[in-house]
Length: 392
Image (cartoon, rainbow, N blue to C red):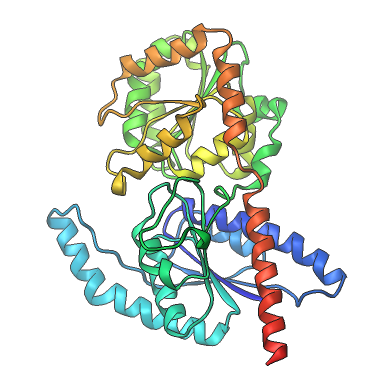
């Protein structure tokens, strides 16, 4: 069974693919023992990505990188120049590379996670009539999903509310967003060792995404002297920011008794991330689908700060869908102030039952079996393809 995965370019596209691949390997091993399915061959073709591609290789996936361009709608001089390069060079070159890859691999079907990085492979798959499955992370379908939805076999969605114009509801399957299972196995004692925690105060985990979040970093630094009086902080701030963040923090927080409670980190691998999740009492994060579903799966209360520039305001809409049952508190301002964030944090911790209520709501929203459901569906579809081929 040959499956070609595509998507990109961010960790938010790669990590769900990784979760599905691990589940596929578990499922096919069981099927192969009963001689119900052919051996699994896994491929990924998409743009270069600093985060995630090595993890795919570690799982035995054959990874090929291609050019992938996109058309930017928020234009400045730099954006116009980038669009010209993408239209004249990256997009046509990417299509040729994708065509050559698909012709060589000859996949049984394509699984597309979306993003601009998926477009070349999706185009080739449609042209060559290769069965294609899509997964839409956000509550509002992205451009790639909308373009290729009509030719897809099925569209899996993270949110129940996701609808796509002119696509029948029976073609859309609500599964949730696949999460990396290893994040569920964090250990508080291991977290204390890794992050050198004092464990004297409640712990807040500031999760800035794979590259950090500059505005969140700036807000945290402003409020850091006051925040450290009541909390211990683990702060994923981005590898490129770590030195500056730590230097600034030491200038702002002069008391040794307080600065020892601040633990900035550039980037956390899944192995370290799971321990940060386990030990934290509250998580502050952007509102990408991947972040929301991982926070929900570990049952942690959260404050979400949607990225204002996100396409179609999808982060804000993701956050509101998640907040309906009380799992999170949303700060939607384009420029959320440190004082407002501090008040929201203190409000959550001031009510003894608030953290427990938010945790229960997070667990209720979680879909930890999303990867398993999708993997089982893909295997079943392959069996159907095999039966159809044999009866011809």
